[in-house]
Length: 483
Ligand code: GLN
Image (cartoon, rainbow, N blue to C red; front, side):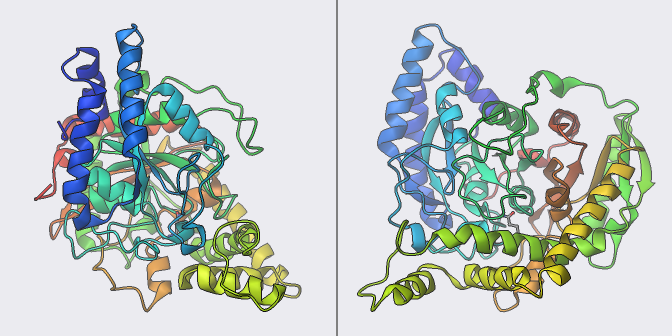
């Protein structure tokens, strides 16, 4: 049962081959048995899951249908879940039970999903390896000595290990696409404003976006359908109609113009990944796509700009965690100053503290123009590069990451080395564009992802290209040994 995709589960439930309750019990048992190896969950919500599964079965018995009705999923632990611990991977929020559901959580619950639990993540979504979680590192099911990517590493590892068919995730600089690449999944970061951020604990508000992680593009389409849409509670949510993503999967790729940026194939890219990307390009050419070399000349400035903007926003967003209003409070504070400094010093891990300090510095009087304002100008140039490119092509294709998943601990002493691994993903966040990563092969037994980017609100085009690719390749069907 655990090998089924969301689409297969929906068919099985509709055909009464099994009930949501049976499926939920099977997956909960599988999680209990296998998750200790990978540490992909922070909290399990068995009682809620069984109640939701029974309710979904009852709704089906009453004649209701729907692709998500009775489908088991999990939420990254930064989506607020009412009455359930929402930790954001941090000691700071270990005792925090959200008083309300995030819009994504309530929309999916209304569609009939079954929440198995909350998945592990880098602390406050800062990271690319899922090693900064207060709940311990997540391991990659493809090789337990390697990282699963981050910050949505728990969602990715759980889906890759077939503990569940799909999960929610968020992407500020690559945290859906990069773990998808590292664990052989398909992950979609939607256009900024497509999915509500209400109830998503903020890291960098102008970059954060929720989206689906699943094994196939077909499943990403199903999950995104349940997540997307205008939300008056989120002032950056965009009131744009949501297309039928599943209906759009079967469009022909004949004549599709794919742009391949020449800057992507620079010295930093593992040549074995470059070969796999070229193989995926050939595959898409066979399906009728036309390849064109393009240029994104400002791409080289994106990492420094991102690592000013994201920490700047984080330093502001995380100021609310002060030991008074939310979460952790230090023991026996001497005075108010001591309460603030020790609660924050003891509650936040070192990567979060590093980002707060960098961000506060970049925003401070005297440095604001030199760092933050300059980074915002680069952000506009990065966006302009994409706008120019999309005048000539429909989709941009390249690697998701320059290297496959590294060994646990390999980049712990050098945060900048980890930041450089985000080179292909962060530009989409700076520009607010949608991006998808899909499986494209293996290097040394570790999965490799190919990334597709599209103009604003063209999630459907990304899912269409990925689905056609997956009908003609079998990388996405490979399962890690032992799972
Ligand atoms: N690796 C990037 C960072 O650490 C992106 C993280 C994310 O997308 N949440 O900021």
